[in-house]
Image (cartoon, rainbow, N blue to C red):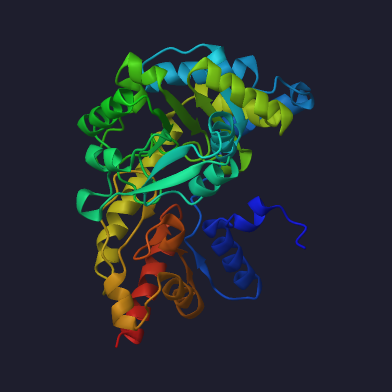
Length: 396
């Protein structure tokens, strides 16, 4: 008899973390692996954030517990951030902070889902959504976002997928892995559909400030008061502020849901690490010029490598509008090289070209793979050179 709970045997390991771990293991063996797997900026946390964190250690503030849902000063900083970038005010009772946006998402699902409740998830989707829904005893219902529609769902598709058990629509814009961004008109249509059917919106906005080439990020919660009351926004400092290791995420939404998430946090992690809270306060309220410099570098990388990737035989990608991923369709590349499975194809690239990419199967996209451009341009261009050589060598 297995001593493991059924929930663990059914749960999948994060494909991005698993692929990164394999790449690191090969590096440790002395192989020259170029790792383009993780969604992790290659920048160091801004110095003004570091200084505030060190000060909180030196003066003793970081030594103690805080309220489970976050320091009052952190909630004030988040409220100020929402006022500046979302255009509306929130109270401290509408804010919860926790150990990374990933755990905040988990706390949301645990707080709102009863067994059998359905969550509509557009595909391609971030790898952890479905397993988190399953852990909360919910049911993930996938809604295919067609590549011909820039990987964005339409209201008709949502309506076709809706049932009497539909409770949540998960909306990730800019998207991981596609980088596509919903415009205002698209969001208004989707939002009205959710209001008409009393469906809660979970807006994963973690990449909202990383948009490129004059694209505008429109938060769905900013479009109307009614939508604001029916939306939980999840965000954090990891991507925008180059603070992945600090593990700071937050949610803003209706008081009842935020209170339930706070209760769960009080019985699981307790408060987010105190020193990380002081760092996040400084990130959210301090000078923002360094962030724009990082955003511009991501944009420059995208504009440089995007045409180079599409020039590789068999690789064809839509140009992303945000985040920091390319998500090429490799159907033709697999045909040319004799592969019928994208995971096998991605593994071959790792073993033979020594470039670590993420199979699209973990994102619900079996004809794609994901490449992160959150690394330096020289590494990216060398990786593309290796991919091109791999295709030229392996093509039948």
